[in-house]
Length: 390
Image 1: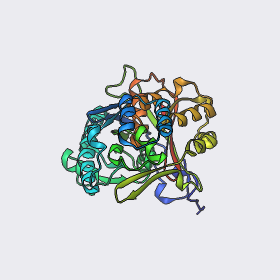
Image 2 (image 1 turned 90 degrees about the vertical axis):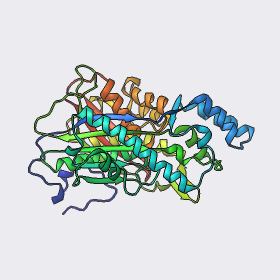
Image 3 (image 1 turned 135 degrees about the vertical axis):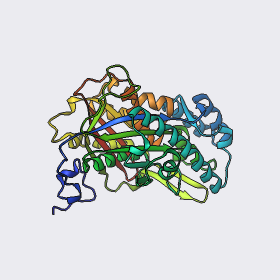
Image 4 (image 1 turned 180 degrees about the horizontal axis):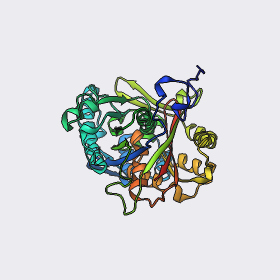
């Protein structure tokens, strides 16, 4: 068997000499997105409030306050959603209480997104074979999938895969794991649910640059995607524009950047999660994005010029700008990433699925057009997918 490095990216598992990925029907029905939905909590937090609370909460010098106000202006975020009013969120609370708050609200948001997603997909909970739940901003045991199985009527034999440690890349990685699973069965359905509550990780007494910036960037939300592999299925999505078509996943790829553990992540301390956020992260992406795209599309007979849609995780304005510059993109190819950043902030693993939701529900794509999906997370790593509308 040909050895595979832990740093090697794999686009199509069926090309690796692994019996677990060999399937007599691997080239038959495609893996398609059957439904997608998003959900946000009730409390809205605008840019003006961010400015106001910066001065109220953090004991910063005049010069540091000025720098942070400039960051707020450049962040391109107009509003974010939170599970609690800001006056409550900024007050320190015991870790046990915060954990209970996460458990309650994560399940509520996940259920809302999942129910709407299944309705759009025309699927019943009992038709789902695998539930992949993603989150990095809290801990829930039993997993979110177990809670939803009891509440929504999933089969007792439904497979569950909780993903907790991929950070902002988790939503894209979950699509990849769904694709892996569906490539190994003749027919099946997978439900991906990403729910993130970064507001509950807020640290009032942490004045490090990483924590200050994260308090400006992150918002709460959940997204769900239903993926299916069927011999015969409708190519249109309920709720999408007239004549809208849906994307299929042609290939997926993961990449772990060597020697980059300190670029992004969380430190778990007595008071909860403290973010790790390196200023060098956007530059890492900038230096590698062209090669990453080329490696993903290699073998599919297309070039970068053939990609019409860029479904990019809106990790920050600088990250999107760097990708645009390196790939020579026009704003129409990334507009939905900017829209999600402006209207929701960075929602960690759910963000890229919010962008995918915008592309599916709003864009007038033509059959045959290709899309590139990517999100970036701790490790430092990226998970990507090649899509084609049909």
